Image 1 (cartoon, helix red, strand yellow):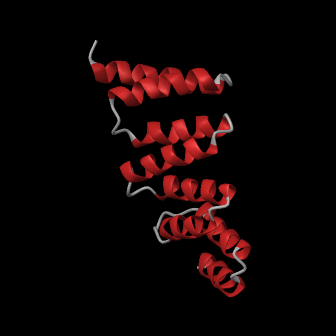
Image 2 (cartoon, one colour; image 1 turned 30 degrees about the vertical axis):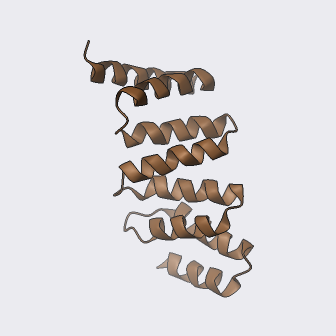
Length: 137
């Protein structure tokens, strides 16, 4: 069997395990897939989701940052990383990452919501209000 086929099998197994609520096993399968092919941004994003479900938010953030680097045209990993930063209290990072994701033409509400929330928590009310109105456009 080719390495890439084995990596795909690990990733598929991880998704099945995750759907069964078997997070630690899903993590191991994803790490095995990523070890074979570290260039798959989607696998890093899925690993971040698994790590988040296991309560390991710092590691989830690291993995989502890797997904974002590997998927530069997809604003979702960047918005998710911003959301993790917000939950970790890294408000300036949340504003930065969320702001970058929000400027993408395919940005979803998460990016805007993170920016608005982080600005509010930073007591930057005028900036939060401006971000709110910009999000509506």
